[in-house]
Length: 471
Image (cartoon, rainbow, N blue to C red; front, side, top):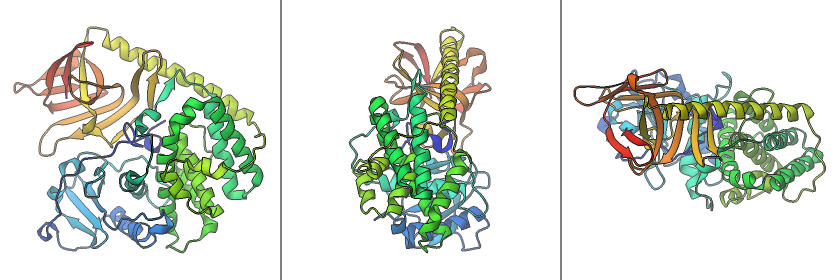
């Protein structure tokens, strides 16, 4: 699924969105509370990790990248508490109300390129994008900060030709099983190589990459941007964790075990087959990056910044040998693809049946309201209708100092650019009997997958689909 790092947000818009817009000014000394001991272990741990991995030893993580000018906020809506970290002052408690509202509404957010570098994480939601690993490892919350921080503050300097990573994350429906097997097998050969340093594993990896690029050239070209963006962010996430755990000692021998442990915390001990090319990007890119680091290849990070995938750099001059076929995993990939196509068909049929029933109202939620802070199982491009959908979409957003709440859970969403409601919107349908209007013309929805309380709206007419409520 694309939930957690399998996505995501990614990442990133789409699942790779660029977080929340930043408009705040520098806090004054009056905004700082007294330097009392921080009674929040996650925040204390974060300060220690940031100091090691993102300041003192940042060149061990990624060349010419550090957090010298980054501010990180940790917020707790329930307790109305906030903590602020920066390179000069370290970590301290600050006044909750001084934090920008958009930084307290979602599970995480960050400023856009060109603005003051700020990152915010919610202690209330504690986003499950990265599954906790173990008490002796770096926590999921800190891994999230480092991963998303690299998207926000490291990758804007990349010189990439493809500027639409959201489109690359989509699963083309109906889906094929063979690309999923080839990418899985490639990841397993990379994992074998970082542990064994076997030339045979590297040569078989080259064969698998060649097959994939030759037989599935459209997907291969499309997913390259995600291999770069998510692969490098995942590498930075794991490398920073390793640097912090190692206290900057630079112990190379332990890196394969650390990366394997962190990957297993997300993908399972058996590194199961994944459902999307975008999910595979995290594994393939981070392992190829680790292999390049262990090989001592200089300048590979700059080549990634300029648009080469880590696996292409690693395997460029390797002579392929035929890769062994894992028939068990190949059959599993076939079964997975058939089940996936069946589930997608059911979800899309339900969406269209409700839309065409005459018993439902159409809503459009601005994607900016939940940007950088939603989970989705799959992002689908239906080749038969040329439309994009989110399946299993979950998000919540609120307006501070008001009762306005919008919460979506496990919903099928049509993603589109909507001139009537303005910009990129998320379209969904709700039965009419679940929708009410208050006397002051605010919207309420009480439905198992949609909860809306006291939300202002604008009623408009969609030329193709009739009346629509813009949220």
